[in-house]
Image 1 (cartoon, helix red, strand yellow):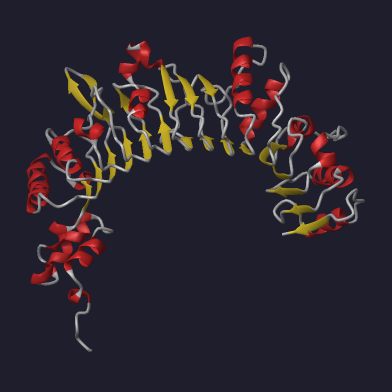
Image 2 (tube, rainbow, N blue to C red):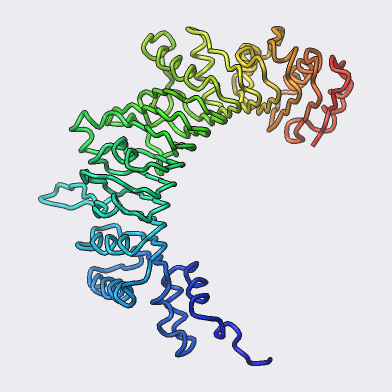
Length: 449
């Protein structure tokens, strides 16, 4: 009926559920709608608070009054979701309030702290906002995301329901291994380490991060939030021992060395690393210690079925191959790789390590150092026996090279079913030339997407 407020007719439980999807500031503003809505936001089972919007010291009292009112309005009800963005300076007692929030049965906790510094006699000292101790024994927490927070050693860690954990640039005072040991059903872990933690610099025991878990299925290392053009001051080794791990993504070089063990369930690996932290430099291929480390890592992931590798990883593997053989990936059926055009000569040698490959997605990146004398003559086993689909993507400005790459697969792939050419790599003119090339496989289709 005209003029009828249908939304206000909904029950409080449904309205508060709807408001839980809004930032708390927006939820509060609904209080001006009518008397019915005035205090409805206080019953919302979620808190999404951006303390960064509190600009002045005098407003801290306003912030605490707001938080206290929210927490005291219905102390027996559950606070299922908490999302807090802390200020760029510490607020004494605020983490105690976060502890109260956790004790209210929180299932989803997302806290972003800020790097804080105190000045004393012209010297700036880093301050850390440590998470409250009841975090480590939460019986309800399912999702945990922390950024720039500190984690103390609580003595006991037991989070029996935690399935997802995201830890970004955390200040460690407890070993990651101990935290994970208290998370018996953890399935997904995401890390981005703090490369400049002064405490870790002074304590060698934090020179190793151990990811040990029998329940873990997904593990990722994220790029750092800030690009840093220098080597980390804190040397650190990453050890991964997770027999149930299925998906692993290493998105940046943050560790001086990587050791993997018992990765027997791997399905997919995404690598964007060059096995050395230095932003621009690569490792010495004749360094026996580094070669052994890389060989051990490659052997450890050799059972994987699907690999994605970036341009810098391809460069690192080409460099490694000059001093050691790349192990076989006998289970690998799908490969996605970014090859700089100057390293296309390395492609057959790399495919030799994938004897049962069925699907290749090849992204060719333009290189300033073009290999005008490109000759692809070696034919690895997968090309002649198992390769069924090849996709060539991205811009590839060297027309002669485009023809040679397409011709190589058409002339040598016995069971090839599809050669898919991206229009960003092959224009209509070049596609027509490719379409006239001889094909070894009688059932091969050349597709121009």
